[in-house]
Length: 464
Image (cartoon, rainbow, N blue to C red; front, side, top):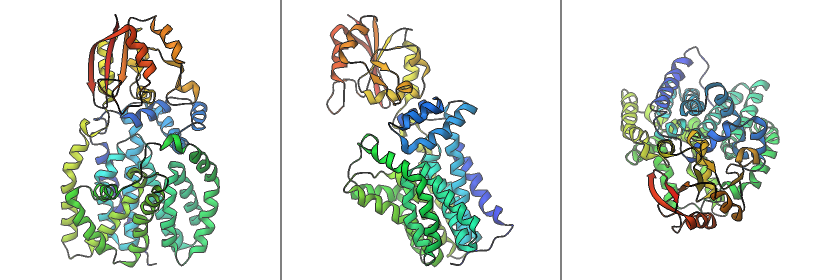
């Protein structure tokens, strides 16, 4: 494999993409509210380390290392949107810089800086770089692992192979699905597969307990996933390209880039192997969703950069600028609250304005309880009527609920109750509603007012 030699100009290639990614990541990062998955992150980040470890024995082991990282950031900088999303912003900058460094090694300075800038401006990658979830960090780890693999193949030093092994461990800790990248790395390492195998194999050993624990929690983690369809494959192509109108130019450029042997050997398998494996497995046991293969997006930009830099000057510079500009409307849309699944800040605001201290609180759907973690202040002033043991003390996200018969006695002690549901009618079909809990409330209480927020509905009930 031909790899560009090291030089002092490397910083001129990776620094601009890193700065651009940092700028894109910080642009409006606190604008949209936390959504329900981020609410889980925020709630777990407030727990002590022993209680986080207790949680991982029951659920979310696959995100355990990430939770420990954001717990550290939360302890140092607070639990607001900026503090908990900032690790992902930093990961986005690492992803752009690392992609530029890979492109430079495989295709030269121009390929490197174009690949880094396309990565830095990717709407998909920036979307997850502004979210308090682990996927941006997983992507950064995949890029770093690939860069270290190329370095190890070039220099063949023990310390370089050790660094690559450590990156594999880090990748698996952020998300076990990231280990699908190893299939692509085998293609990159051919024909020198022996040192690769002697590094990757031992690196997997410390991850085996995590893989086994995550597999045992599969029914609770991914029960909502269905078998993937061709529509979802098309959607993956669309979001990786940046927008529907960018699919054709990006794919054409990627095909041009794939004609370069070094880029093809590294980037094509990275782009195709993990999604293909996960989709094929999901036809039997559904595990696929697009964010689980987010870490493959930099490979597309490496190929597209290779295609651009094959064209005569000044096409690469102008083409990069046009692709970035064409994606700006998607960036603007992503910064709107309506683009997110939930507006939990609005729910907290409704409660803050209208609640009375000591009002009761109920959730029509038990799993919806974790949204309290996003903005806990207003919920702390309410009497959580259905919970027997809160999530933090029970090693769960939602907590352990009281038996149905105990709720009537607890309702007797309040005159007003807030009910959070997905729809105006908490008993509407298609919801996994705790009907006994809602029936107990409606027996003696009537709804006096309701408010819709993005992602749900909150009603105020008063004793008749």
